[in-house]
Length: 257
Image (cartoon, rainbow, N blue to C red; front, side, top):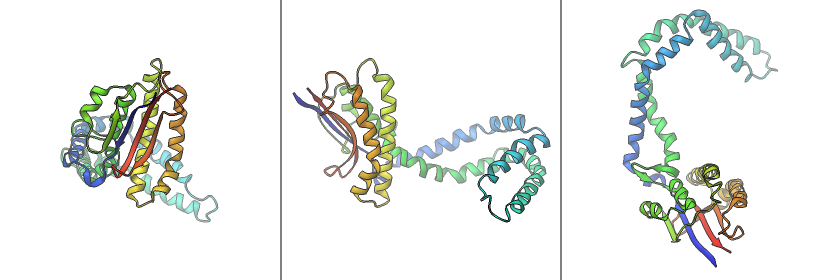
């Protein structure tokens, strides 16, 4: 019968991100600050003495740090001796300042306020692909609806970043769709994220296509589990650039035998 459904589900561009997304960083800061007392309680339980500090912070940290030093450096021993001494001397400051740091308005909360913009900068790249269901949808949750054949839900969240023809059907066999779908969505998410980041970095389309080829290869492997009503040779899930939408998308084609 040929193609019964084709969907292009586009990611946001940075300049298209809604202002409401910035609420995420305030939510993060508020949630993190709300755990202040619990974090202090847990720290106090685990690091309750100078012996705990030396064995659980200093010794473990030094072992990890030493593994990063070139073993052929002539001054390796000097570097480690200085580090061990400085960290051991820090135990008094740790216990003296820990309580005050976790007071309301203390260094813990100040650190969160200083870090929230960086947190948002990092999470923004994820939101570009996933969106936020309370604020604005991006590609990934729409892809899930399409692969489940939920046309009624999908039609409610489509926007100018998308292009759809036909009616989506369930892509994978009913017996395994719930088990396989998280893995498929994960590959879509990671691959689209890489494509968007590479595009933002100024890489050419051909360069980006070479980078995301491994994600598309993995997505092609999932066709072995496609529903019997669909043609595995002419149906596909891929990460691709849509010139009409002028953006990187998850592209789904469903064709029947």
